[in-house]
Length: 75
Image (cartoon, rainbow, N blue to C red; front, side):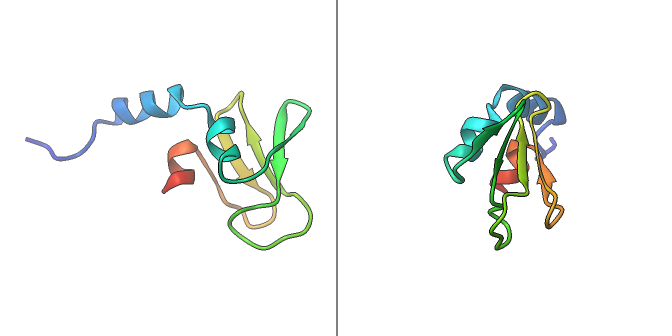
């Protein structure tokens, strides 16, 4: 018996999660075109370089390079 969570289950959780809603609970996001932007929660900055793509269900910071899915954001 494997104690690992199946990758298919993890993928399904990520697919069903609204990454914008999830991250907006932690960081105040502002809509910028198709994406959302904010100051990065992973490092101090004054200019928003953190973006969230609802289409790709992915976040990325152009300042520090942090990136990932909703699950990665929470971990």
